[in-house]
Image (cartoon, rainbow, N blue to C red; front, side, top):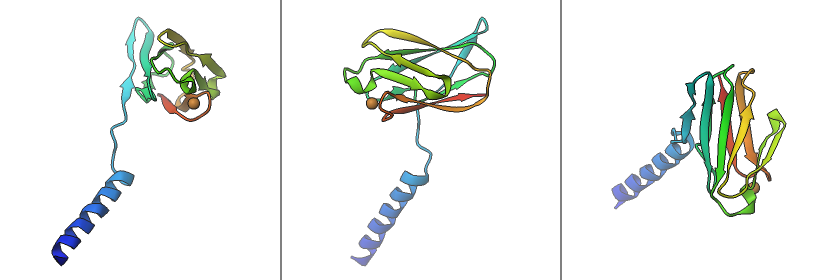
Length: 122
Ligand SMILES: [Cu+2]
C-alpha cells in the first residue's frame, strides 16, 4: 500500500513539474516570405491561433486576423507597441500591417487585455 501511495505521489509531483517547467506546445507560426512580403493568418476563436507569430525583421508584414468567436471579448485586437487598436468584425478578414524594422518580442491582446499573443521579430 505504501508503495502505491509513493508511486501516486511521485506521479503527481512529476505532473506538477511538467506543468510548470515542461515545454508546452504553443501554436507558433513562422511567416513565409514571398515577393518581399510576409503574411500570416491568425484565427481568433477562444484565443489566438497561432499564439506566437515569428516575423523576419525588415520585411513588410501583414497579419490577417479572422474572428470566428462570437464573444465581444475578442472583437478588438491591440498591439500597444505599434499603436494599433483594430476592430475585428466577426468572420471578416482584417489585415494589420506590422512595422518589422525593430527586432524584439511584442505582445498583442484583446481589447480587455485578457487574451494574448506574441510577435517575435528577428
Ligand atoms: Cu477580452
